[in-house]
Image (cartoon, rainbow, N blue to C red; front, side, top):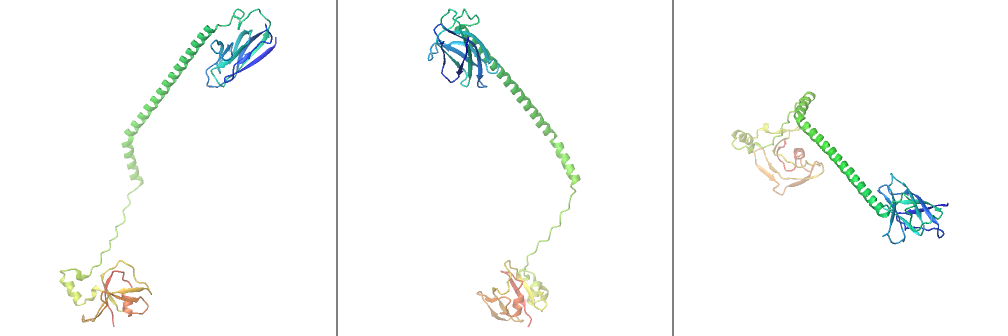
Length: 305
């Protein structure tokens, strides 16, 4: 006997099994699963008399990846036959066969010579029942897995709810302990005293109703004036909020010049008088008298002779 092999592919065309001579027979010994998709459930091996027609398929057996990858066949082929596989496009099956002497039979297969052979209808029914049982078993396993996952999720949710409830119950005690700890670790620090806010300067003449102040101003009482070392005296009537004059810069002032007896002898009017500060363009009393003024201020100067 000569041993030969046939390779069947899930996406390939049916493979022809043809005896070399008239009267010779090919004995299919076994089928072996070479490769398959790990997710595939089964690979069905079948034979037919015509390559394009699947109405008269004869199922030889089923291979299950990872569980049953080798299947004994014991089928005798006496005429041109075509073998194929279904169920997994990625599958590849090897049929091991050998030429045997003529046993006198005829036809596609000989049921008498193969006691283990199962007729087509019966095999299909058994395969359908087996497939149905496998589907039920898979469905039962999936249902049990889902129930286990639901139980785990339910247990996790229960633990989380218990944890949150316990945390809320302990929250007041934890806050009280934190307050006590803060009191022990952080003694009270006295706040620095507030600085006295500056009081706006107001000319005594604006305080209406104070006869004494008016009398003092009328007679030029000097205790309301500030005196500089050279004898220059001044009193701020309005304190400005702008910039102070800078040496060499142009300044504009409005002035009224009077004598000691109050007689008015000169005035700049609303137009004002412009000069360069600190350059000697005016008397020294003016340069010194306005040196500390700010834009918008008004000052009374008493310039010594």
